[in-house]
Length: 390
Image 1: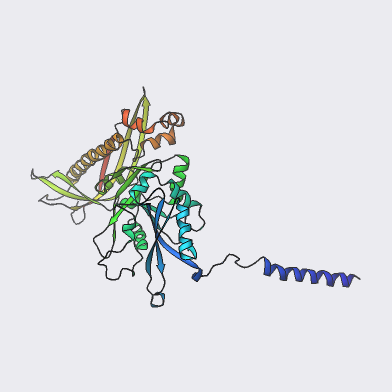
Image 2: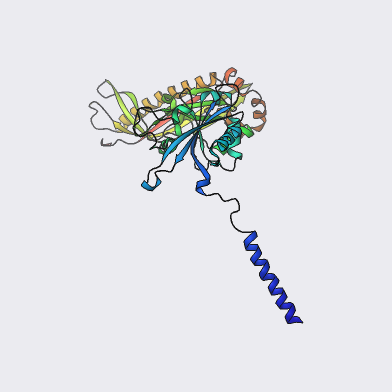
């Protein structure tokens, strides 16, 4: 009797395991490559007629995969919302739209001014899209223009332009250009959801170079999720010096040489650190912005003779004074516009919760109306004089 029960039990267990492998394993929602449309990039514009969005999807063309060449095709869809426009692509393509390889999503300035919140919400919540992709603002009339090959391009399909744009952002490492301020989608979502931190996104324009079709063109400045201003590329070195740090950039400084003449000495930044301090007394919020910059001398015109500590201190002092004036001018301009792009008020939020509750109600007014004049102090230390002996 016991042997029969043991055999029955073993048989039941075996059948359970067999059925489990059939029912509970395997990719039930698997789709082959032939069932999916791979989207390399997306450009978001406002619809031409009425409300809603127009999406330009750059689709990877795998017809040349056997020869090791991948090109792209463009598809335009529309919808009242971002998700509706994506589902319009489903209907036109009769396949699943896969967004998992996108590095960058371009938005037009019109979309940015209306608000990037709906786009960020979709990208973070949709299971097909990566939450660590970047969003950039197109410096052209429409975002679609940047994904559209030029008419005189010899082989317009032999480049995936969205991937070239992503590569352009990756080549500019933190602290060297506009790409230093390129938050990922989930970071943008968190800033907008919590109201903590200011938002600035890279502006991208078309390049005249055939090898690099894009160039970075400053920062789009936001209040909430709406674009309210722009910082030109020419201001980026000073902006980075005052915020995330500046390295591997050259800048000229006029210095009086030993011969009594003024020379244009060229320095190269190697690293920098910025620190914000503040004080609140008698209803006045005052800031101090301390910056330390390490640099090298790369060009020293004129006959300086042997370079000693006196000559180095003279160059360091001239550089510090010039950079101090430039940082102070940029801070004053941003404050007048109500833009906390330098993160001055953000320092208040981190270190004084009580004061922040007052400031947070009308942050732009605090920047515009209060006597907020950053007391900037830049210290420059020359680490090397290159070929010139110290």
